[in-house]
Length: 105
Image 1: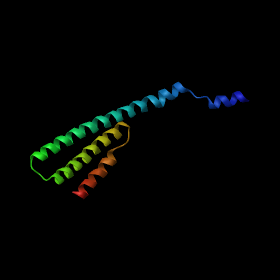
Image 2 (image 1 turned 30 degrees about the horizontal axis):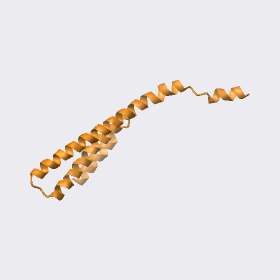
Image 3 (image 1 turned 180 degrees about the horizontal axis):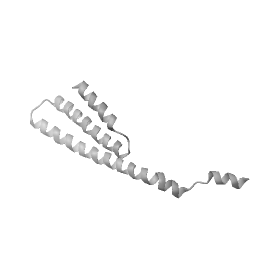
Image 4 (image 1 turned 120 degrees about the vertical axis):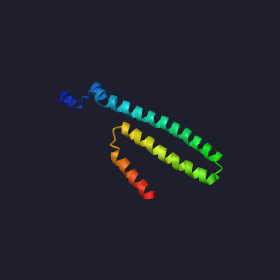
């Protein structure tokens, strides 16, 4: 009787690793790499944008405002790319963001 219960609880670790851990693990690692590298690139681009704007003699408050907008837009691209790597369907998310952009603009 005890042996029959063990057959139901028996867990095939190798099958679990091959089926779930490897594909999802690789996608999660790649999504994190995309996010980290994207965040670094966005930080550099926003810094360069700020320096270019500072040379143009614009008001500091306007420069900070525009830098935050550029940062938010670029980070949205990075987040969508990371979610796409995880297998999330991002078409509806992009459509919502586009509609929101039209409504705001």
